[in-house]
Image (cartoon, rainbow, N blue to C red; front, top):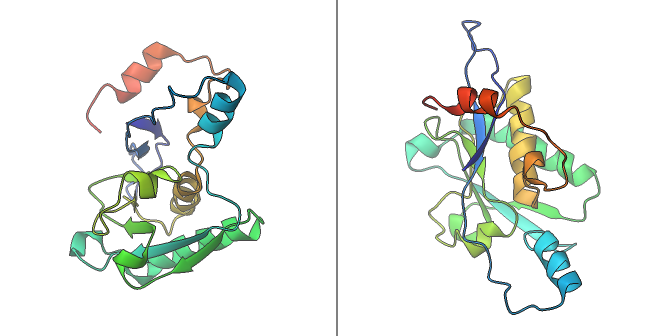
Length: 184
């Protein structure tokens, strides 16, 4: 899984490493496509939703460790609203049953914050009793609100910035290994 460390301060003013991770999925086999231009376009847009798609979402009530409660859920609702207000061409609708949802959201504090990217939610997480997105820390802080927006960005189909092969990021590999070399 790919992770980014944000290291926000905890209530005791200590640094705590909180990372976002994206579930690994098998790359789609596109070996039958011989036209290079077509292959690049399909690869780039593979996980994106079609304009006008209605994304239904559900907040787990059970098991209890996946329940977020009204305050946490409202932060996610607000994040959906912010994305919608950008005019991105998608519609978001909350549903009351996991079987009716494309995006199924949990709040397991022991599982970190993560989300499938775009269409991976339907391509690889077809069991309605599995989460497609999880929030692993308090969303009521400024950092938590940014986390909600960030994870919903993945829901929309956006990978991490450092996964762009043209990002031009030069990594200090020693520091990266030092930061991520210990326990989560």
